Length: 78
Image 1 (tube, rainbow, N blue to C red):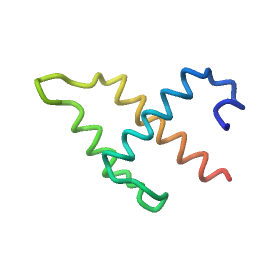
Image 2 (image 1 turned 180 degrees about the vertical axis):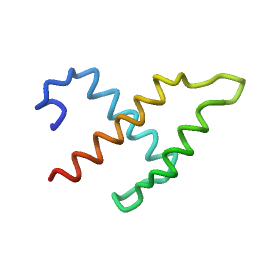
Image 3 (image 1 turned 30 degrees about the vertical axis):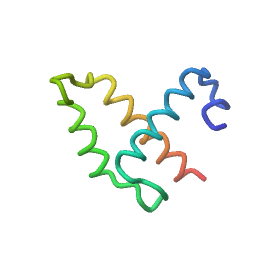
């Protein structure tokens, strides 16, 4: 609702939701207290070299990071 109120496109909202869920699942974040910047950083670093030699582009990793930064700011604003 926060992103929609800021006129984010539905595609952007869906992408950010998907990114958030993927990281939470991969890092084991279930509650707010589970969120851990070091785990997120390690996860992002791990995406630099994926199986089969493929990598996640820096811009994509930055998008995942941005999703979590925005979420953290939203949590603190309330």
